[in-house]
Length: 147
Image 1 (spheres, rainbow, N blue to C red):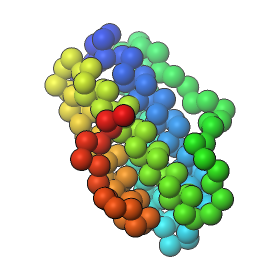
Image 2: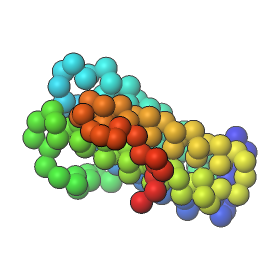
Image 3: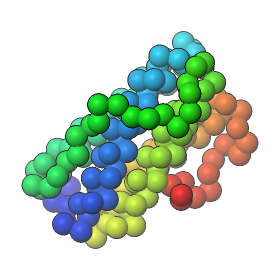
């Protein structure tokens, strides 16, 4: 990937912040999730950690500010059982999709837009998987990442 431009930096930093929050959320999801979902939780959390790490490396290599993870994050609702854990996972995916859509919208280079499209697609697929687990209808969002 080419070095991101200064104009792309803020949206990439926002995406990194969203990835930090998703990694935190998946820690909570793992604690309350149905044990039969352990593989899905681990894979999804791993995807967010990999994305977080590559974004941190990319921003650091470009001498841009790479926001650090907060000590903790406020959850959008109490998580007390496997259902609310799955709802939190779906929400984390929806939130990261919003951040990655902004990367696509503000991308000045094809590399950055491609990175954003891939991450947005990954988040939308993971969100759909959680909607299937929850029995949510519709399963997919026609415009993922649209606030």
